[in-house]
Length: 219
Image (cartoon, rainbow, N blue to C red; front, side, top):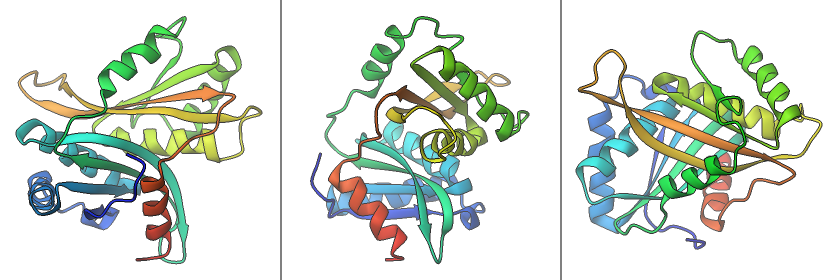
C-alpha cells in the first residue's frame, strides 16, 4: 500500500459535470483491466462525481477501495482547491467499514460528535459548529451524501489545513460508502464520513503523496 502506483490516474474536475457516472465507471473498469489498479481523483466540485463512480464500480465489478485521501492542491493551473483521491485494486485489503465502526465505538456521543453537511447550511456555519464540537470532544465525524460530499471535503480541509483551529487536527479516516435515498429507497447514493482527531497530523501513503505532488506540478 505504500508504493507509488503505476496504474491509470483518472482526474475529474468541476468542468466535467456533464459526464455521466457510468462514463467514469467505464474508464475505471478499463483501467483496472489494463493495469489492475486505478487512482481516481475528484477536484473541487468534481469530488461527488468521482465518489459516485468509485462506489458504482465497487458495486458492479471486482473492484475494491484500497486507499482514500483528501488534500488541498495548489498550483498555477489549479490555484488552491480541494481534492479527494481513491486508489482502487482488484484485491480486498482495507476494511473501511470495520475501521469506521471502531472509530464510532470510541466516540462518547456519536450524535453530538457528528457534523452533518448539507447544501442548506453555509460552510462558515458548519465550520463554527465543528470548532465548537472540537472544543468539547477530541474527535468528530463529518458526514455527507450526494452533492454535499464536495462541501464535506472542503470543511474537513479547512479544519485540518486552514490554520483556524487552536489545536492540531488530523484526518484519521475517510470512509466512502453508499446509503439509500430518502425520497426513493429503491436507489442508493454515495456518502462519506471523515473522522477528525485532535492531537494528530494527517498521514498519507507514499503513493498518495506522490500523486498529489504530480497533480500540483500539472503532470
